[in-house]
Image 1 (cartoon, rainbow, N blue to C red):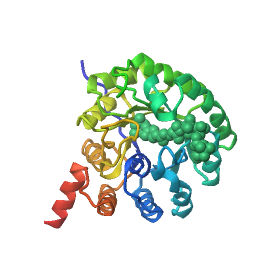
Image 2: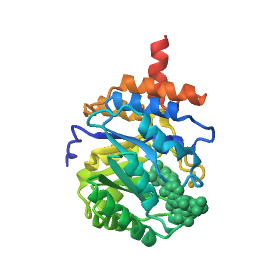
Image 3: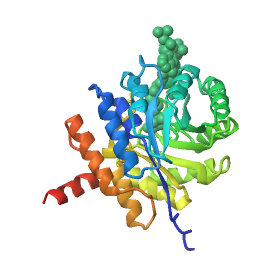
Image 4: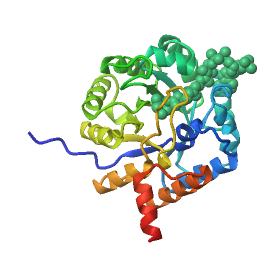
Length: 305
Ligand code: HMG
Ligand code: MG
């Protein structure tokens, strides 16, 4: 039996300025974040997750989100997204003129409590108001499901429990839904099963893969998702990141590595790999450490040779 062909084009959602930087202990100025977001949008990335309007007591690094949004050069056509846990965050998202609001729940009860201090059911209730407000304002609405492939507190998470949250987020009117492997424990077969279960509840072309690379499985997992037909992938420039409420979780799969894979497969992204490598070098220098992107390091070394 021959496998179905891979997609011919995918959408890359860059989450480095949010998922990447939220976990940094050192203070990163709004100017540096602005420069990073500008470089990424100018590289052709169609969707940049640039802000998070959560409680600054919970995630201090994201407290400058409004300044960042007010300082960037908006690229026409680029979608700028922000995490929004409640109506307090929604007010800021409106002020910041976000294009897309991201409500973020979990497939695991334990993680929901640790990350947003409420149960899955309570989070859906809280999101209802945010979802309605976003729709009223003509904003895009995305739903993100953490720990869809495993949980640091509870362990195993079944595809059915992830699919159940997909259904609830769909009912809130989400335009796009992310299946997130927060702690990067998932493997390729599991990825296929969770997307197949999710696609019974929500159109496959609007489901996204959000993979962290903790166990080095992210690119294999992306390939598995491509085989299922998933066409939206999240990644972080220089492989930045981690979640403050998921101990030991490393960064997202690096954008440079995903672009190298996609372009090698002849899959169009509309993004300049070279420009993203430059952005990766920029932020790595600012953070005072080497990039976590293998492709980024290799391309930089080749340039220097
Ligand atoms: P809570 O403490 O239960 O809420 O937190 P609260 O309503 O009692 O508020 C506590 C204080 O925070 C109050 O201030 C509020 O005003 C303030 P006080 O009266 O004590 O001075 N507050 C806010 N301030 C600014 N903006 C707001 C806001 N909301 C409340 N929006 C809450 C509940 C949801 C707010 C909190 O748990 C929170 O902010 N959690 C966010 C955690 C987070 O950002 N985690 C990382 C992102 S998720 C992630 O990375 C995973 C993802 O990448 C996918 C994946 O990989 O899995 C998306
Ligand atoms: Mg994440």
